[in-house]
Length: 262
Length: 325
Image (tube, one colour):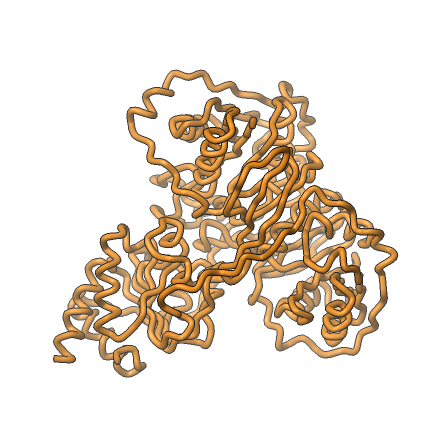
């Protein structure tokens, strides 16, 4: 099975406090720790496991700038066979649909049976996979937490409310958005990174894939971010200050009053 | 102003809570808009849900067919494209069904798409200004959505207060013929596998010590279990702990896990993503401990401590044990 996995380089929200920059047009990016989007990591692991079971290859693609290379290389170190970067000044400022259009071109440049994305990324929209499937006219399943390969089709489980799982049969080729927890992504050691350090990663721009600049990037975006902001929040929690000992004492008093200690 | 449509989700003949929330969201976009609810399902479900929707929506369209008894987005999408006039605004809930259906629906309708809307500001010169969150809820973004070709919006459940929606007695129209026959989909629904029941039923617990990423390692879970034991509480967790296979799924609080209603909820190293908070009902007394002072959990907690749970929890355990003698 020929598998394409779409990955994105994002600020790691578990490692960073995200603040809004002075003019509100962007977040403060100094000193941010970046990594591959957590969901995408599960998608790459799933692709590798499918390939190892049924044969074929795994390609990792990222729409991004020069920095995208670092995460594409990391996912190749996990075991993806090839990497590709979709990069062009005209791609900058793309909305979800713009990104999906760029990825659709990447799909048509290869011969894939299966495209995986993460279920969502740093913007929490979870939109690119579904749009990509619609552009390709391929069937789609979102928030997938189980994949079993069959002949010409897959059996997939979708995560639905209440911890339940919706089982579907889906024809190939198709697009799936992968939920975290579907597998245990393998650890990438320094040796793995070194092995792929000098592998050529091709870059494709709008001309190579035949995209009209007006359809993508800020020019083609129907949805634009005007500003970041932090709303005037309510009072929020009453914060307990002091040393850890003092904090614990105060908290225990409160817990006793609220029936938290039996 | 474009016509507005709301896609109503339902289960066992009952509309989802978002039936009123989507109506509220539509009124925020345009208080005078003609808003139509669309209900699709097998005939018996459809009639009951359409009647419920008609309490909020002046107009309800029903599509009754056994072929759409289960909401398979791949089957419903082409029917909706046929049914909804181009240029309309379509609202749906941001949940596993909305996420499945709507990105593709926007493409097929040539409409703009904006996901997980948490605020609606105004319509300004053919643009709809909405708010959403990014970076796990740490910052908000003000978005401009071009309405010239219509728009599909998914709305975060629980955000738009349903109780303020005025009641009407709407008219139900049968649009089954207009939606056309259900297409033979390339994705076929097989069955729903119910969640496994674990050894502890956290939905019945009065006090929960709930751990998130801040626990850092599987070995450290012992610290949370000791605190819970001393307090007479049970241990629950957020999604990353289940993803890492450190605890069983039956202990996960959230929309994709269990819905709990404790009296006291100790959120230990949990950031407070809305999917997590969606599983927390009954207005519990929430205590939050987190290293990140900006964690959204501090907005919903009653009391908070900015600190390391690995330091605070053992001290709590020791002091409570002492107190109990």
